[in-house]
Length: 170
Image 1 (cartoon, one colour):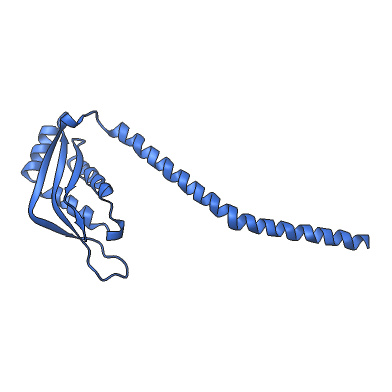
Image 2: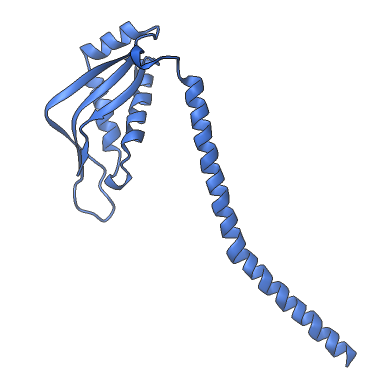
């Protein structure tokens, strides 16, 4: 009789352990994964801010010279189609404004080169905008991508900002 009671107690403890393990796996582990992802995102944002401060040169708003490229009629840029959607989405763009840091060492050469032949800058903007889906469109991110691509293309830190003039995604 004592052996049967002991067996029942051990069996009950085993069942309780199994239930608690299942609760742990299905409720605590996903919450921990979400927390880990949130911490990773926050850490990446902090790293980006630190990188921007290190990479960026010292300049003020007075040191910036904008160069505007405007279109008589809005430029129509085809975007990547959405999956399962037959509609062709476009971005209409009224123009582009590129800001130069006038205190940069290569300011004169880069600004002159870009102003004489802005086709390459316009192409970078078209390709960058065209690489987005309508649902993924983020104007600030696209402008930052254009700055990075233009800096790589012209091998300079003189180009500090690209602004889309009157963008409309449809």
